[in-house]
Length: 109
Image 1 (cartoon, rainbow, N blue to C red):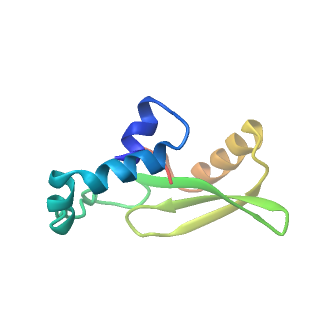
Image 2 (cartoon, helix red, strand yellow):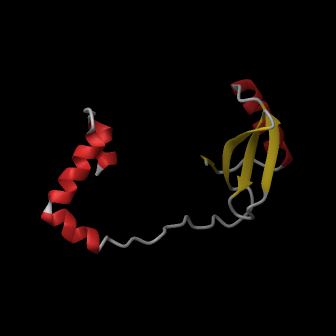
């Protein structure tokens, strides 16, 4: 509820006000005892390596940033030392993609 409110507005002490309102709401108290159960939803496997990748920066590790690229099919990681500039990131991606092939889908994280 707090996250939804933060998306639309802000006021001083909004977290406390929302918590107080939820504590005094009968409907909220009834539903708090039986939260809605959801299942994890994974993406289907596209059928081969390097079709879909996940990429993000990791670090700083000893003052360095790393571009981490992981194949969603095999979970094979590839790390390139890089700065976070656009030019360095593009160069690192090009270097990696030339060693495999172009993915059909690339995701951050």
